[in-house]
Length: 365
Image (cartoon, rainbow, N blue to C red):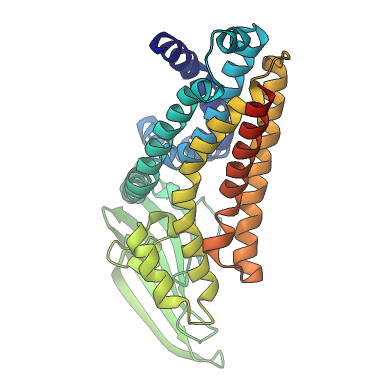
């Protein structure tokens, strides 16, 4: 029996790695294109791009591990069925659940890996991305914005425009910044002839500032020889937990944010999204166990299924699962369905399919 287990475990590794790699490449494609554009447009160090991709990888792997593992199980057990090795095992007295066990344990291991990535690695990786972005900005100001392009940060009410950027000197010319204040529709405007980027600070020189009242009339105007603006103006500060993105929050922060905002009508949707994020981090990795179990049941049989058919079936199940997960989020956010129910539906469907096909296969034997 141990020989069979070892044989199946060894067979599962390469196809699963292959499947995970394919889905990871597909999901990372947009990220790769974005950072490559930054590399050529902003003359960023190549090592910075590698670091960025490295830190972005855990969040993608959490999603692709269940899909790749399912594809690997389908290919392996489909191949065993195609060569009649499954038939030979059953003829030797090896039961259905004994055949399933290696794939099930394989799925549990991947679930634990996924949970580790989701709960511990990914939040830290996102924090490192933010720290790296600040560091790059100090030496490559064009990574903040392109020349002659106006960008805005609605979360903090800031917008900025740079007419000319020099990465070699970490300087800029004709720097425009607007700062929206409260309910005043007219922002404060700063115009600087020159700007110098230092670690953590943008030093503006020859600055003119303008402020307006709510009617649009000029309220205050002033001139400064030099003014400093923290780079944190354009990025989230570490101490502001509620300003973090949901991906950057750990489970305790997400739960705290949910409880603090769920009764506020203006923040209810953001609170629900935080709750969805909590369940998604737990439920997503758990799919590896159910998909590996289901993969065996969809592959084994006395008729030859083959790797080609297994590949097609795996894609249908994977996209079906993704569709259910996306619909579950909509049900929580738009139809007020409790997240504790809606977010478990995709995995519950997988579990029901596993039980159904297990009973059907067991009776067929």
